Length: 225
Image 1 (cartoon, rainbow, N blue to C red):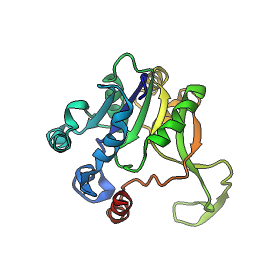
Image 2: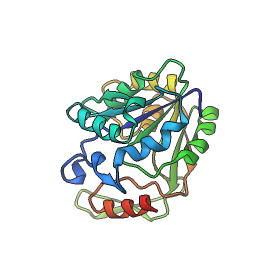
Image 3: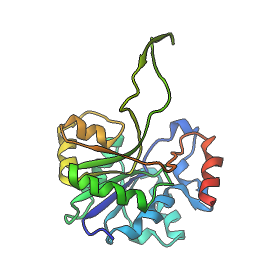
């Protein structure tokens, strides 16, 4: 158990690319999608140090789903904002003052586990932030708006970044203050914009995110295994 780590699980996305419905409440291998991450990470932190950010309209459904598995009372529930950044900031504000580091995790990635967090946190302690990723191996092309290739992008030192992303909590809070009014696709981008360092830690394990309906069957099989 980590005594100074808080975890914020972001479960407030719109799931537009999924094609309707709240994908995070979808049951995979008999468990709602968002609860796979909760159940993996909850034993790693002190009571009150795990926050789940949910849409206000679906709060009751999330609590009911967690209650079925005996987890609702051990979670700090926070309602998300209009944007991802606003939702993450709400989650950060709910963490206890004893938390010195925070892991921000996308609830749509149910395969991330304690072993990955164990590798990220020491690097975050050294640098101030650490994120999991996989090196880009495909050839990358840049195109014009009409789809015609205009350049081949050098893939050296390029990474596909995942979550959980771990940061020194006060640095991340300051970074969000500096980024007020701007929107970012991940928290490493917020840190970068503020001038704070973040290291990438290679993650060879599958950390698939459920984005499209076609991802469901594959994730369900992996979770069942």
